[in-house]
Amino acid sequence: MQTLRDHLRNYWAKSFPEVSDQWQYWWLEGDGYCIGVIPGDDLLAAIDFVEDSWEKFDSIKAHKAKVVDKDLIRKDRATYEISNRDKSRQVEENYKAELEAYSSNAET
Image (cartoon, rainbow, N blue to C red; front, top):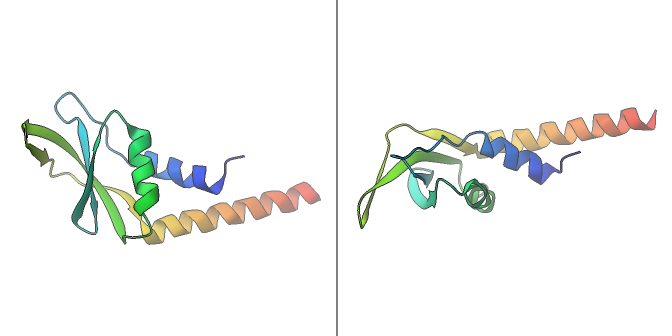
């Protein structure tokens, strides 16, 4: 059975948009401010970043991004919510309830 940490990480992983040849990065925003740009071929790094940040921000959102000049990265307009603190806490609570129900059923 998954740990709570793995369950949350899987929840976040499903929320990232797919990258392409044109859009090769994820531009991450916490409460509307850029908090990181992660290469799109490193989902684990992106999830680690969200895991380290999700309790600091009400919301973490991602945009696909691309390099348009050697020192300039442009984000796409489309926004993907990766973590909403309230939703992530609800995911935690639901998972804990599932574990309790599983444990109760295993004991009987």
